Each structure stands twice: as structure tokens, then as C-alpha cells.
Image (cartoon, rainbow, N blue to C red; front, top):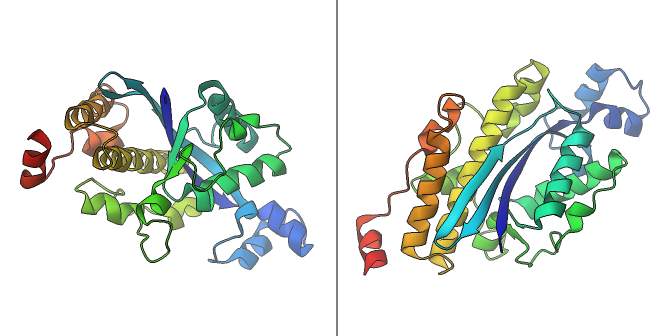
Length: 257
């Protein structure tokens, strides 16, 4: 496995599609929004607002972060976001890592590629849609042993592990409001923090299952920290992540023995 891509989507309701379903005027967004209300839309009705992704490359001693970003519909069309992401998967053929990706992000990508009439073979570069495949690791599923009762939220798990979690005052329920009021960059920044939290949970998972030694884990954390430090002036929202994880004293002692 030469590369890993950790990704996350932020979405808003596709009000035009809602209008088509309910046979109302296609430009009557107020009526469509009234129909949507505060309920969670069916997955095909989630228009992608941004796709956050971190790309890391394997080395002799851990993982090296190569890129991190969250392109969004403030700069590019939804179709372009999906096509670019799929093309990158086709080029790298990486392991995909997500949190609830099998239940949300991956099916939304597939639905929205169809809505936009895209050819996106990169989504099938490996067995990403096979639930129990190592080609796509959904940490929410895997850590819960694929049971409902074992699942928790990314923010909860990150904080349990001593990671920063989500920024204060921001969560998925506010994405549509932020996009509607021109705050799309804040959504993208929030998306990046979710991606970094997911990456760091994955590193901890890799350490736990023996895929990373304690030294390789520390080097991987250091690579992330160095990557963020080098960009701190332009991306202050990532500042809380610019330091390695600290293991509990007894765990750290066990890892070094």
C-alpha cells in the first residue's frame, strides 16, 4: 500500500432535485427548502459542497503527509469536485479511509456522479464499495465491529483519544446555513479538521493492530505536525493539530518496552 487517502464530504440539500420529486417550480427554492425542513435527506439529495482529502505516502518508517485540502463549490462545480477526486483515486489507487464512509460518503459520491452524468471509473479503482474490504477502511464501522451499538461519533472518539475534535460551534447541521450565507470557506476549513481527526484516529488504529510500530507511529504524527507547521500562517484552523499525540504514561511505557 503506497498511498492512503483520508476523505470526508460536506453536503447541502439539492433543492432542484427536491423540486423535481415534488413537481414544484424548479426555481422555487423556498418551497423546496420548506419540504426539506430539518430532516436528513435521502442520500441522492445530498449535493456535495466540498470534498476534503489528505494524501499520505508510505515510507520505510511510517507515513508522510503529501497534501491536504478541501476544494469546494465556491470555486468549482460539484461535477468537477467529483471528477477530480475520482481521477486522483484512479492515479494513486490508494487505500481509502473515512469515518462513516460506507454509510454516507461513498454512496453519496456514486449517486452524485450519476446525477452529474459523470464517468468516474476511479471510484472503482479498487474494491471501495465492498463493505468488509481493506481497500476502503470505514473506521466508524471497523472499530464498532460492524455493529450499531458499538458506533460513536468522530468528535466523541477523537476527544476520547485526546485529539482536538471538531472546532467549537461548528457541526454538520450548520453546513447548509454557512454555504447559503457565503461562508463556504469556513465549511472547507471545518472539513479539513474532520479529515485530520480521521487520519489521526486511523494512525492510532494502525498502531493498535500492529501495522505501525511505536516509532513509525511517532514519525507519522511528526510528519503531520511538520506539514501543518509549514502552513500555519495560511491555515490557522489546523493549529490545534500541529503537535504529536501523547500516549498515556503507562501505554507509552509499554510501547517502548
